[in-house]
Length: 359
Image (cartoon, rainbow, N blue to C red; front, side, top):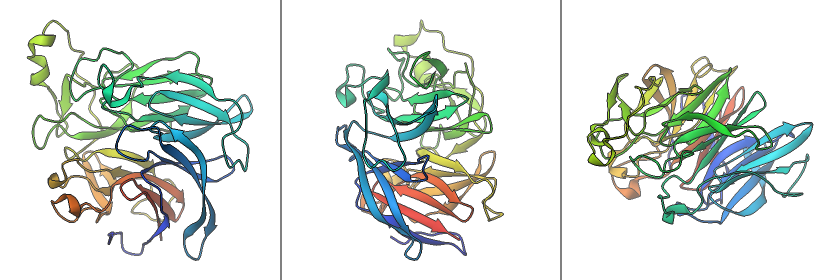
């Protein structure tokens, strides 16, 4: 695979051999962790890895340590210190749990604390499986979890679906933070604002609604399944509004506009703000991983892009797809993380690989 990167940059495979490498996290002792969901199918074969022994000459990790296994679609882990104790939080389809974490740990230790439970029957669930990932964020002594919808477009039977929830670090005090979010696969607090990527519904029009990136405010409803966004306009989803099945349900008010709309079916996932980065082009901007459409022929996404303004973005790392055929998709970027002032990481969950990009 010949990935295209900005002039003056270099790229290498920093680690490989995983199955479906997803999201990255730095531990309190400075080690890099990554989740592996194993496959696209609903399964309990997921893992968490530690990437260790960095070789700065080869630009590769010389050691990959299996930290946890037999997990149910682990999308993300997060580290948090609660009352002086370090914990690793693990977000699986059916639950959020935490374990005590000590510097240098090479496996899970101690007793599992289950903090919250989510719809868990996977793709065969009575209300529908659909979105199996759970995403994490932290801010001001609160933990946030994103729970995707059970369908493409429907009125949910469970309030926790298509929402972001808030709780205390020990799982107590759980409440709804925001609703109307079909699937926010990445959430992150930056400068006292909760930013998120969120995917809009399918089967409306070829080019809209757009997939979105923006801030999420407490108590707001972000429209799904009643409204959609296209070119900084909010419009009703008539297929839902006119459905006889739901004609007696009152939709919420129109949602706020998202900051950036990506082409429909781009599937934005992980992102990071490049703050104090030694490149004026990237510094101060968000980089977002566009996972790409499940319909490969659409040629949507499949790149790491930089958001340059409202509804404006440019490709920074591309070449993951070279044509319209299924065999032409060579990789799928999932997460992007700034490493230091001169480098960043990208995960590829099609190849189970971790890329290192440096200047």
